[in-house]
Length: 281
Length: 287
Ligand SMILES: Nc1ncnc2c1ncn2[C@@H]1O[C@H](COP(=O)(O)OP(=O)(O)OP(=O)(O)O)[C@@H](O)[C@H]1O
Ligand SMILES: Nc1ncnc2c1ncn2[C@@H]1O[C@H](COP(=O)(O)OP(=O)(O)O)[C@@H](O)[C@H]1O
Ligand SMILES: [Mg+2]
Ligand SMILES: [Mg+2]
Image 1: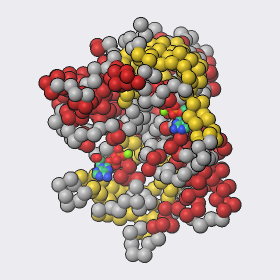
Image 2: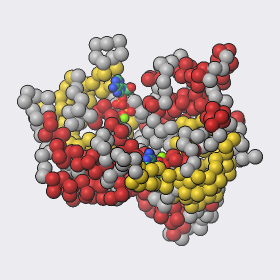
Image 3: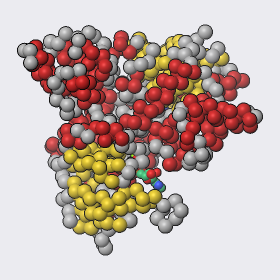
Image 4: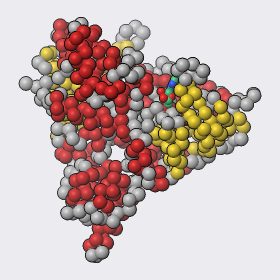
């Protein structure tokens, strides 16, 4: 069974004037049907305003469909009684590392979610230990989050989600505010959680390089899924991506340029190693 | 009209138990016409540094001079300075506060005392430059996607037509097309109006392709200040500072390890392409 499934999902924002009359509606999500299997690593790409965050917020019931249906692990998000189960099954991580951390000690922050849910104390500490371990932040458990780098803060935020024992993590541009090392740290952590813990990952990003290891990529535009496929399939359509205000990883761009200049290279090169290997056969 | 920082030190919460020494003996000179990238790990002091350029922060010690004058000297008009040195904040939420996008972009020019007609023209032109069409004019800044907020914040500062345009991570959260568009707009403004553009960025690829000078901040000190090629030459040291080189630089390294004689210091795609083509050609001729 799919961990996340949407059927003809539509979401409209409406703007009203002082008399509560609708003056404008923005259709942010337009008839999207997705099916994501447990354990998949999915990346979502799309230009600014294409509807990525709006879709993401439907997946843990922060927003409810205008029409259509969203199921999270079989639960319909419109069923109010499942709200907490849904939020626990699908956790979210956001862009700004400074807005997601509440406590003044790392381990308390990570334990905050389960504590709020009334998980027994002993179990909370077990989860805190495991979650910090999983994101590689055990050494900082008694630190103050203020003193962490951006990448470390995001790993703490991810640990906070992990402590809820989710089946799926949705990350909305988790690396947008990070330096190159922080970005690498976060992406590696997420991959690790996906591979060793089998957590389903949905990653929204504007950095193409971060998606080359995804199982599948969805490209959205104007609220509609315009492309889907493996990274190789998607990134071999550079012109189409450009029309959608996206691009390809720098190494793929270079490979394209070399091909145009007459060098015999296979299509769909995505990593430095692939290109180096192909040029130095 | 250069901006100069002389022996600038900055502490947050000076004299309390929370004291942090963020900028350490910083000396810099920025000139009109320059296109400068500021890079550094998170928390290195980039945002603190650039808020000194328009006097938003006052150095704990040291001086900031604009056109030779101490901007914290007695009677200095810092309000006028903020029209000359425009600053786009790291978080657009800190900048957008009017009820709708258009009014927000008008705020700066209105403060400069321009006439209504001119204010409107400037706002329209700036919104066009950042790619926000009329359908956004009446929207509340809260009704925008992340990247649209960023664009609106940039437009607000462009509308003041400053001599120095200082932008704190202006492309964070922008789609790749938007990143290119913003860099092009900045490049054009610099060429046409001779203004200086100084921007903080975490995208080494973008910085390498567009700027002429890179300032590397590490733990509150200026670690390097040079042209991109010379800065990225130190990519191993940059990695230790939480940074990296552009992806093509690593491609060049990987090819060299496999025996292809590529220029190790390429930092952009066209440079890499030309250097690799040349090396392949030489290899074919059996060197
Ligand atoms: N609160 C809101 N009220 C009205 N319209 C909104 C609101 N939030 C978003 N929108 C609009 O909905 C559309 C989709 O926005 P969304 O935030 O999902 O985009 P996104 O793909 O996440 O973009 P970005 O890459 O900039 O984060 C956009 O047209 C946006 O302007
Ligand atoms: N308002 C503030 N109060 C106290 N400390 C701060 C404040 N703003 C930033 N800092 C600290 O100053 C250092 C530099 O921060 P900042 O200039 O924001 O770095 P960057 O922009 O390079 O990420 C960090 O250690 C940060 O925690
Ligand atoms: Mg978004
Ligand atoms: Mg900053």
